[in-house]
Length: 312
Image 1 (cartoon, rainbow, N blue to C red):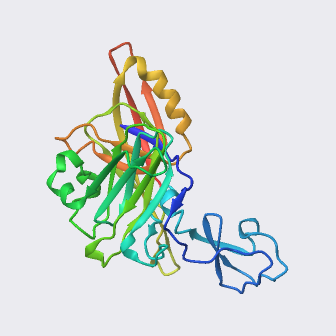
Image 2 (image 1 turned 45 degrees about the vertical axis):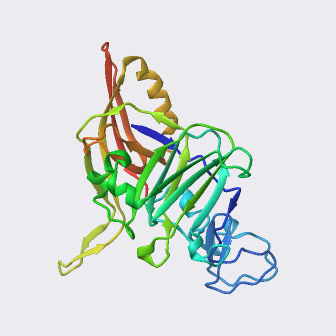
Image 3 (image 1 turned 45 degrees about the horizontal axis):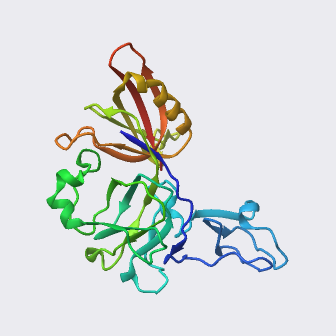
């Protein structure tokens, strides 16, 4: 099992445009107008006078946060927000989504809630004057090479070519320079493409996942009865809860405990991918560590119990 914290906070270059204009100081905004400030969109809750110099994120009684901006959405460690290609630089959706960022010797990258026909990952040490290496993943090869691509059927369900959302990860050779990601449009979706999340960073090995992953849910909906006994439900998000056990060498017990401790209260990528012939330990999700316990024994293998709560 691999655990990784998001290391990317911004891009050095991208073709992603925003859906709304940037906030401008000393500008009047009417109620309901939406602007971008930082990594979020904000809606004016009151009339903003042209004498105002306070940014929306510093005046949240006057502005309501709407959602992450289109540029930032696939970096925010949430699978319910996404970046798409509807406002890219050239105005041509066929360009897809293209981003570049500094490679700090990262060893893992993952994509989730993706609609695309192909993702291309390029590596360069000289700002893309030359390309050192390229990894291209397309839908057709994913279908025909299931054991190699390792699709998480058990957790995410089967997928089809074109137009389906999927999630996958790949390990990287740590190196310096830059990485360029190109997410191509989907032919089945009239040239549309999106990415719900892209996580890139350095992974922590958390032991080999044992078979038998427990999957449950936490329902945040509210149910109540009125005076006539009629049931009413206020629908809210439902989170996945994943419980599993991993095995690791006895000498790795305390180093793992310390590494996992540093990831508590963080939104992280969780990947369980230990074999090609079993679907039961194949998990990929964004979440937080709800609980982690290790039974330290004087035996060659020790075992850790993990409980993860899905990030929404």
